[in-house]
Length: 163
Image 1 (cartoon, one colour):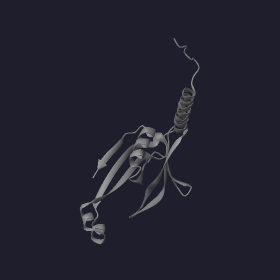
Image 2 (cartoon, helix red, strand yellow; image 1 turned 90 degrees about the vertical axis):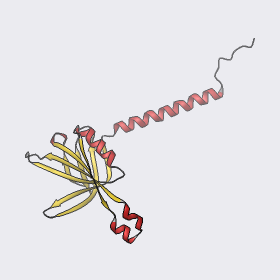
Image 3 (cartoon, one colour; image 1 turned 180 degrees about the vertical axis):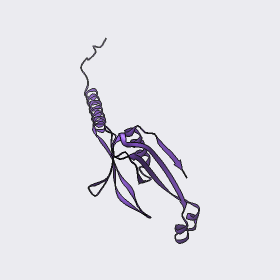
Image 4 (cartoon, helix red, strand yellow; image 1 turned 90 degrees about the horizontal axis):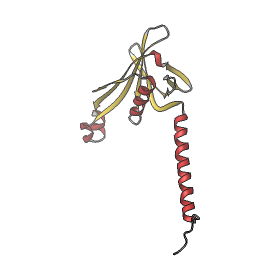
């Protein structure tokens, strides 16, 4: 009967080391993901309404996971800041409209498609207790992540309206 070798082989040592390294990267990645305090989303536009005119200002949306605060930043300045207790309601709207111009100018099959826009309305009370709102135009690439992050941070359910 042959004697068993209780010492690990080179292949066993390499596979054990590889598993330890992969496990270490997975743990460090999850720790780094949890340690970020705020989510930042680019490609967001703040719709600033004035009398009869609405301007879209490009910037980024910052959602603080710990405090539940929502901020809109554009070119380093803060245009909107809403704290978690101030939020009264959140409304998501998806609007669609036919692409007539693209269909006539570019290709006729575009006549049968619709362009979609995604909006988030944040209704809140300012420091004086008066009701205000902030209208944000979201990009199609990140609107679902923004809705989930805002809902999780504020604890307020997002009402959804689809046109």
